[in-house]
Length: 260
Image (cartoon, rainbow, N blue to C red):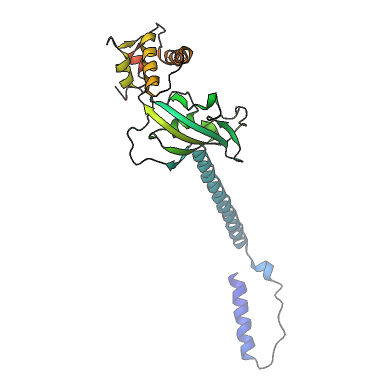
C-alpha cells in the first residue's frame, strides 16, 4: 500500500510540472503491490469484526433469555383498591375469605368465577400452605380486608406445562382478587396457642376442629362437619410427621421457626 501511494504522489507532481496534459495511466501493478502482510491484516480485521458481531449477538441473546426467565418466575401485582385503614395484613398461615375470578392472559377469557361456584360464597383457605396455586399464595400476601388486586401469574407458578382444564398448558393466568376477611388461621403459631387448650404443646384433632368451628362462626359463615373434617385432615396430613395422631409445636411450625 505504501508503494502504491508513492507512485500516485510522484505521478501527481509530474502532472503538475508539465504544461501539456498526459493521458491517464492505468496501474496494472496494483494487485502486485498488496503484500501478503496487508492481505493477512485485512483477513484478521474482517475476522475480528465478525467475532465482535457474533459475540454481541450472543450477549444480547443471553440478556434476553435471562430476562425471560426472570419474568417467568415472578408474580406481578397491581393494587386496584386498598382501604385507608388496614386492621390486619395477610401472611402465611392466615385464614382468608376471598372472592376471585381467573382469566387467561392470552385472550382475556374467563376460566373461573368464585361467585358462581359453590353457591357463590367467598372461598375460605389458609394462605401459604398450597390450598391454592403458588402464584396466588405469593400474590395475596400483605393484603388488607377489603383490598382488591390484579395478580398475574406465570405458568411455572400456575398450572405449569400440563395445564388444568380449561386452562391450557404453559398458560399465564390473571386473577382479580377481593379479600373480605383476614384472621389468624389454623397454621399460625398464635392459633396454635389458642388451640392448645390443655397447654401440653401438642394438638389433638378435637382441639383443631373446635378452633375451626369458632373461627368460621365468628365470620358468620358456619359450615357443616364434613367441611371441618376436610380442613382438619389436611392440617394433620401436612403437619403430623410421625403420624401419632397429634401435632407437636415443632411439627406445627411449618415456617422453619420464623414465628416461634
